[in-house]
Length: 123
Image (cartoon, rainbow, N blue to C red):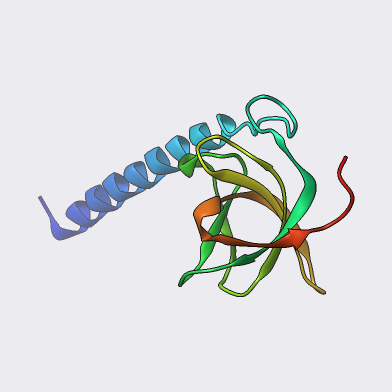
């Protein structure tokens, strides 16, 4: 086989693998349904709690409480403050991060959060 044909074949194989990976990622995102805050699956934290991120490195945000549901490029770092609203039995916490430039809501692993106090009256 000529060198040119080998390059085309390898490019086609690589493209196929990339498209297959993208399709799997899209399937995973469709299955990312967050539980309703206040449901049995994610009881409310009442009143909402203030938290600070601890540990080292980035704390990844997720669109739902599952490692398959990572929000690409969305994370907080140690020292960042969050407000928590709900928590699952297996340690996922529904949070909001607010900065002067943006805000984001999502789910994080609760083992990296330190409680700093309540954010309002009990509901």
